[in-house]
Image 1 (cartoon, rainbow, N blue to C red):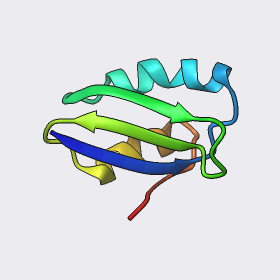
Image 2: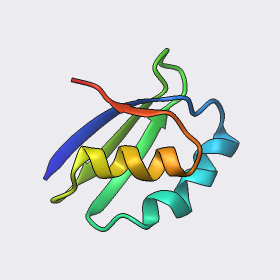
Image 3: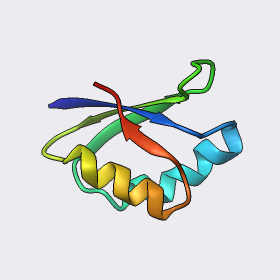
Length: 70
């Protein structure tokens, strides 16, 4: 299992709910959450065999900023 961490521009719970169908399109995600209290609005994903670039691409296509944190 991999843990992927991303900086996003997700601002509120409404936008978090809109991520459900977007992230559902990615096979291998076991669970995820967004820390809305963090300055980077961190998206944390627990997944199996998923490339961080794929997550970035899917979220960017949905209109969100998403960049993997090192």
